[in-house]
Length: 118
Image: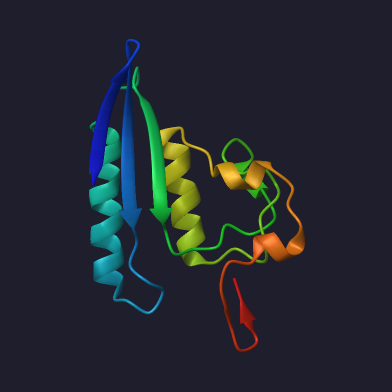
């Protein structure tokens, strides 16, 4: 879903996205990322973009080659889905904003199930 706002002469696109979960088919994941890419490419560069939602990936704590979009304060290791998130952010000149702020460890984990924490 995309909502476009015009406030004091600035156009901002608010995008709400929910990526397929890790155990979904590769076809579903590819379709989601292709469609999101189409939406992002359709927004003029002069407009602002806010992308929120659950992209179902872990961008990890290390920036690697993604320093412009990753602030260095993630959690855990990067997986295939997070690579897609970071590549998409790079292509669209977006940032994973919550990685730019240091948080307490207990605030980095948003989901727990048994011995798993993400």
